[in-house]
Amino acid sequence: MQDQIIGRMDEQRRRNGFLTLAEMAALAETNIVFDPFSTLIARDAVIGEGNTFFPGVVVQCDGGECSIGNGSTFYPSTLVIAANGGRIAIGDGCSLGPGGVQIKANQSGSVLSVGNRARLLNGAELVGSSVIGAGAQVIGAVSAQGVQLAGGDDFTGPDPDLRGAVLKGTGLARGTRLAAGDVLNGLGDFATAAVERQLAYHPRSK
Image (tube, rainbow, N blue to C red; front, side, top):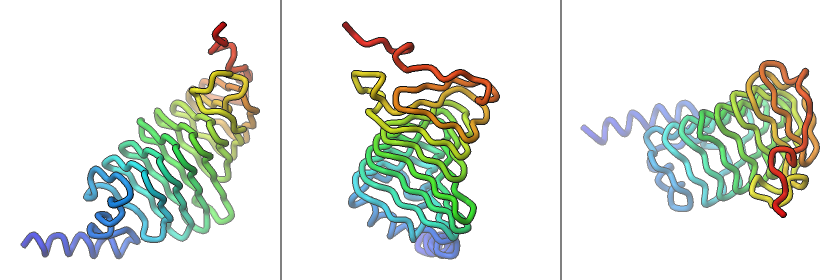
């Protein structure tokens, strides 16, 4: 009876383009998968090693391309979907979540890249062609569309001026471009928010 149930589950997964439970177990030989039953990984996704997948993570390539590097953490309810010819590339050592992060490249020609050690959390949503540079951050219920955040050191870097750009707050950020060391803190419409320097938030220690 149990084998029949698992067989039906595997058939549903295959039909929708996801790894079977046995294939998820094979993935767990080089990655951490806490709950293979609630985690869905596309069969054609390219997955590196040392990544951590919490329950409820979905990586879906529905006519698109997904690649994930090494050593990143995908917190519960993270959604990564490349559809209709879109492409998503996630680098090494990234942190996606907690907070239900969504990364969606769902139109033909849309390319979305997340650089090494980038951090997305607290409901961040990336849509369409965007570049999140190494060490850059999107924090909060921000819908980021067509943004370019320059890379740099991650948030632990000693010099705020050399850290990746930060987009934080709530609301829509469309076409935003930030340099290394910049921070844009918006509420509602980021087009009216002033770009600041991270040094103002995190003064260098003397």
